[in-house]
Each structure stands twice: as C-alpha cells, then as structure tokens.
Image (cartoon, rainbow, N blue to C red; front, side, top):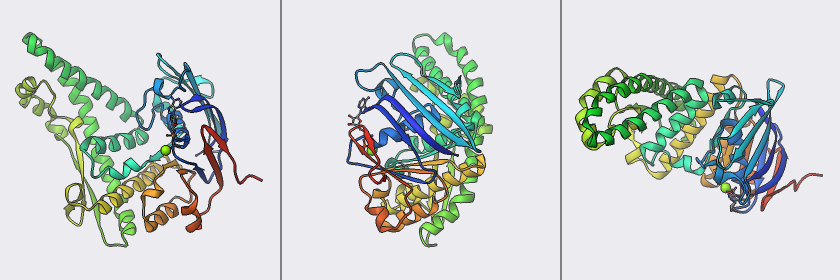
Length: 363
Ligand SMILES: Nc1ncnc2c1ncn2[C@@H]1O[C@H](COP(=O)(O)OP(=O)(O)O)[C@@H](O)[C@H]1O
Ligand SMILES: [Mg+2]
C-alpha cells in the first residue's frame, strides 16, 4: 500500500496543507520546530486514530481553533481509499473510510499499515519495561485486529481492579467484587500473554538474520519474552497475591507487568550492553517489524522515519536505507547530506518552513 496524498486543516502548526507523495522515498527536510514531525503525526493518526507520541486531540488542534481535519488518500491493491479524521476539542474524534463512519480503529488496519520509527525507539532496549511493552503492543495492534480490543479491555479491568483495591481499604465487604473482576482479567490476560509469546517467537525467526547482517555476522541476537506470570498460572497467581494486592492497593501480577529481554551472545544487553549494542539491537527490532507486517498483511506497510538517520552511524544508515528500497518511505531530516553522500535514491523532496511546505526541486 502507499499514501497518495494528505490534506490538513488546523492541524498543529498547519492552517491548511496539501501534499502529494511519491510511491517511493519522500524526504521532508527543514530546520527544527518547522512542522516536519507534525506531518508524520497526522499520517499516523489517520492510520491508527492515535498520535504516535500519545498526544491528546485538544493538544493537536491548532492553537485558538476548535476543530481539526485530516484527509488521507491511500492506495491499496490499485484501489483508492479516502480516510477522514475529525478532531474536536471536547468530544471524541470522528473517523470515516470512503465517507462511511467507522467505530473501531481496527477497521483502519485493513486499509492502512504504518511503521513509525523515531529516535526514541533507539532507546527501547535501555529504557524501562513500560516502553518495551509499548513496542509489543503497538506491533501486535497492527498485526492482530483483535489484540487492540483485548488489550483495551484488559487495561480497563486493571484500572477498575486497582480502584476497587483502594476502596476495599474503607469498605472491606467489597472483597467479593474482586473475584468478578479477576475472572475477566484472566480471560483477557491469557489471550494477551499468548499473543505476545507468539509475536516474540515470530520476531526471533526474523531478527536473527537482520541483526547478523547489521553487525557483520559478529553478533547473534535473541529476544526472550518475560511474562509477569504464565497464562496457565494467572488465575492462581491472582489468588496467591490477593492479600498483598489489597495491602499495596495495586495489582501486582499480569501482562501489565511484562517485559522482554534482548540477549546478544548470551548477554542481557538491557543491563550489560554498550550504548552502540543497544541501539543496533533496537534498529534490528524495528527492521524486523517491517518484515513481520509485510508477511502478515501480504503487502508493504508505509515507513515513517522521523529524524532517525542523524542518530545512526554511516554503516547503519546505509543498511537501513538499503533495506527499505521497496516500500514507500517518508523521511524527516534537517539536511540532505546523508542522502547525497550515500547516493541514495530520492523520489520527492519537500522543504518544511514554519507550517508551509515547498517543493524546492520541482521544475
Ligand atoms: N496545537 C498546535 N497548534 C499550533 N502549533 C503547534 C501546535 N502543536 C505544536 N505546534 C508547533 O509545531 C512546531 C513543532 O513542529 P514539529 O513538527 O515537531 O517540528 P519539527 O520540524 O522539528 O519536526 C512548534 O513550532 C510548535 O509550536
Ligand atoms: Mg521533529
């Protein structure tokens, strides 16, 4: 699939904007704080209903405005799809495909598939478990339409259960209600654990070779899923931890506490890896994601690369750029030097200046 065009109205620092993209590599360059990332955010939002950085709708709407509109034209299997997002300050957003309103974000995943890569992703190995879980969840949501629903239900239940644990302190009679939540929590939680396990397995089928190529055959990488509790033991663990959870007023076991470990040559590089090792492993993770999405949807996703190139050394830049030649890519950067020095093929160049976009090389 590829993105044909995008139109913005009162989105971040854009009053209005229209852009037509090439099917290949598109570069958006410009100084800092001009609005490059905002364009990728608009695309990501249109494809997933969510901001890649978790911003709220009211933060995204242009200052002093009440509404924001995004329209994205997507081409999939030679067919054009029109996706509309309508953000409002104090109401839920509206979304439509070809003019028909949609209720669930997952309806979009049959039409749009995106891989977003930002400099923060390069820190995924060294950061805390929360960010690694976020990685698992974002990927799984793209690959498995039901995962999103299961995860949302699970998270809702954890919140309700934690709230109840706090209320129990004042009203111990509520303890029986806990069992009702626990049954549901286990039923969603088991699914999430199994899906994460399977995802990590699939990841390992791919990451090995990518990482080996990235390190010139020097390093072998393995990802190990570390569930907070095994799915078959989840129900029992909740019972075992009941007193403790009540004391702590917090749910101490479950997929909301999962993590994964990244092992290179037998060493846990979360703790013992050098920064270079950790970043290369993060790059391998992201590249594996592209292959996994490709395999799953039997189509190519669109890659959004936000300021990542300047964070990588020359050989990793080359590897990254070489491995993405067959998919539509939107790259933001502050200059064009990297592309010139790598003699990398560019299909379209946009210059972004203060919420306006120019085509500097258009004849
Ligand atoms: N809701 C908003 N309304 C208007 N301008 C905004 C809004 N949110 C962010 N901005 C502006 O967008 C700019 C940052 O855009 P961004 O895309 O992150 O820049 P960069 O080109 O560095 O990627 C800043 O100048 C910021 O003030
Ligand atoms: Mg930016």
